[in-house]
Length: 315
Image (cartoon, rainbow, N blue to C red; front, side, top):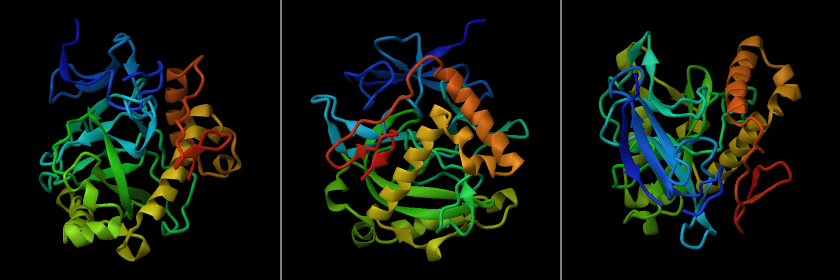
């Protein structure tokens, strides 16, 4: 039986087959019946609608101006959960093509029992929180094996699968079930507040209470599930833009190692416990299969954001 495919949003960009610098030339489709285990949200190229576009791998980290095809000062944000909603959508990192799906627990679709989230939530493409790496400020905890999480605090409600250019403002180090789970704070580059917000202190100055509310959301959102409050590193402080960019740089480099297969050949992988090795192998296998016979994508450089010899961002 043919699956139902529903157009969700469409936008337009000059791009190579495996490199999309903005939402342009991409259409986001809903496949299957909503509110079922099978429902998926996928991006496809307007030029070649037969091949799904990975919102994790095929969208560049640096946003590209679709009119000039030049890098901008912004990064791309892939939305998974719109503000004022509670369905726990996420990129399926271990599925070919990496569609967005609703998370499950014991065969049931997950929602935030705490209630609606009040900011747009998603991730930065081409990043990966390496579970074999322990950041010195992460209270001895390893990465959570997912792309970097993003809290976008603008006024617009961004839909699942939508790609928006954002300004990086800062970062919060959350510890979730013994894993480091960084939360990058951003604002849509087109938002009316964007000209006033350039670093984390600007958020507190112009939008007092916003950061505290974000921290409390993450501290308490699992309590209705019977779990204890989450904790935070760095004395619960939101770190500034410069610190956040270093975290992003590390996670972009880790992503490069993952999708090129270098991670599985590394010393830190060989020294990891069997559980971590299994996680990485599963993720690496599914994504390397998706990219078979293709050169691993690297990001586009700009005067402020360039790449080293291995394709990782350098600032």
